[in-house]
Image (cartoon, rainbow, N blue to C red; front, side, top):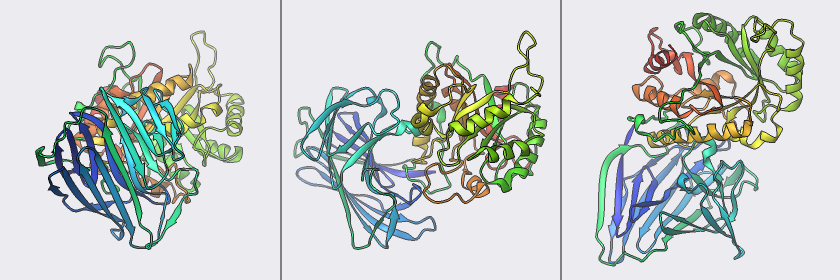
Length: 547
């Protein structure tokens, strides 16, 4: 997907406008703010899509004014709200938003968010509060599990010799570390999460918020400074329509940090896995047998109605690949766990993990039940150490959700686990190509922090999917595993761009301490094998890497 991107320059300021986002806000060529955008989230934290009109750009004697009209839509295209965004470039860069609901809205967030560049990690940060006080702190170097700054009225930081000030109006703001979800940013947003959500906004209310960005360097903007407006076709902005997350057309250009102590491109992920087919696509062609493939990752969710179908398909796919199964069970108690283990009894297991259906993490009571089951098994599937002693079945703890959940529950992680797991999707908050590409470098960061948190326990990453497999932060009940799987399909999965992104993701996760990772699925819309029985571009790369 491409969209028209308008670049506006005035004096030392430069901004890029695309589909309602004010992005890459730069002063003297230095990006001081990654983006300012208007967002609307529903009760399950899904982002409402929107339509935008071309921006209006009006220069005057003192600067330039830019106007943006945004129409917030429901998933079926029904208008939910109108937003007017005004951008003013003069001595400062000011972004003002007025959002007017067209009908009563139930929302978790409606307003402005400010994204700060990830290279600020570890830098000094000043946080000013509504009561007039201020704190000196730092942007977190390691990924922060919780808000690194709260009760914000203004922020101050330095970047490349520039002193940046950000004044916020219209709400009380706080900040989160979006690197948790492999977003390349820190995010400042309105309405603290300590307040109840979802909440209701009536048509009689108008949400008004503003951001004023100043730079503490000699002011180079003069009243007669020229205004430059450039329109060009470029990557779609960060608010693509749901269901069509886009991958970059040239993913190989992303900068992915090398693992510590390794030459660029020298590290490898030792075990490359795929997942079993999900949703309604469980009767397609089987994957090819490939030497050195990792175990087939199989998830049995809380939706028991799908277990029989999943296990049947997993048995066929594991046999076709010639690999055992990496079984992950979602269970609230021992009874559910044992039911899942019984349902998967005929699968040849390489390892087993268990996760709570509410926290999506491994909780101690259910972990103890899994250990009791494992320790009572007489069959070790032939595993033995170099001296011929039987080796117990490895057990997996951690989370089936984002690194966020691992980061936030790490104190509850069972330290007697054999492996620690977490998953990745680059499109939790945005689906545009630029965002998906930027996530690659963040994958290395989350992998390194996961290894640090695991503290000697090997890490396994995955599933890694372009779209999320399920909604880990929903406030309403799950629609079921089949529906979740269908929603997790991305139309770009079968493209060359997705294949290139996959290869870069393998490189990004090649971090010492990461034992292996799982990408995509065997067949179906997220599969390595298409409906015609031929390998997709992603499948071709996967076969090449594991052979």
